[in-house]
Amino acid sequence: MAHSSAAAAHRRRATGPAPSLNGPASDIHPVLRRATAPPAALDLLAQARAGLEEAAVLGTPNERYATAHLAALRTAAAVLAARGRPESSPRARAKIRSAWEVLPEIAPELTEWSALFASGAPRRARAEAGIQGAATVRDADDLMRDAAMFLRLVERTLLAQPVLPSQGHGQGRGAE
Image (cartoon, rainbow, N blue to C red; front, side):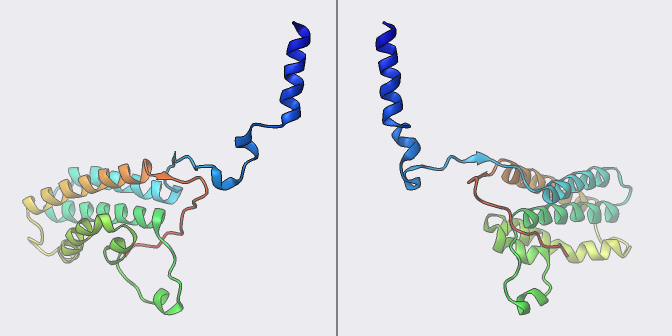
C-alpha cells in the first residue's frame, strides 16, 4: 500500500501543478472584492455625519439649513475623493467648478441629488450671511432629511462598492 501512494505522489509531481495554475492569465476570471473608500473619503463622510448631528441641535433654521447643506457638500466631496480624476488639460484645471457641477460627471447616478443641493446653495449663502428668514423651519427640516438620505446612499455606494483588485482610486478634488 505504501508503494501505491508513493507512486501516486510521484505521478502528481511529474505532471506539475494543476492546469489552472499554469494556464494563461486570460483564463483566470477576476474575483470581485469589497473595498472601502479611501481615507480622505471616509473622513469626509464622518464630517458629514457629525455635521448632520450638529444641525439637529442648532437653534435657528438658518443655522440648521446651512449646516445640513454643508454636510451634503462634504458627502459629495467624499464621492469626488473616491472616484474623482484630475483634469487632464491645464485649461480645464484652471476652471473652478462647484462640487455640484462635477458630481454628475463622476457619479451620474447622483445627478438628481446634485441638482437638488445645487438649487439650495443660494439659500445656504443667505442663511450663512445671517439674512433673516433665509430658511424656514420646514426648509431646514426638509434639507436635513434630504442630506441624511444622501449620506446614507453615498455610504452604501462607497463602502460596499465591488471593485477589481487591480483598480486604484483616483485623486480627489476639493469641494466648493
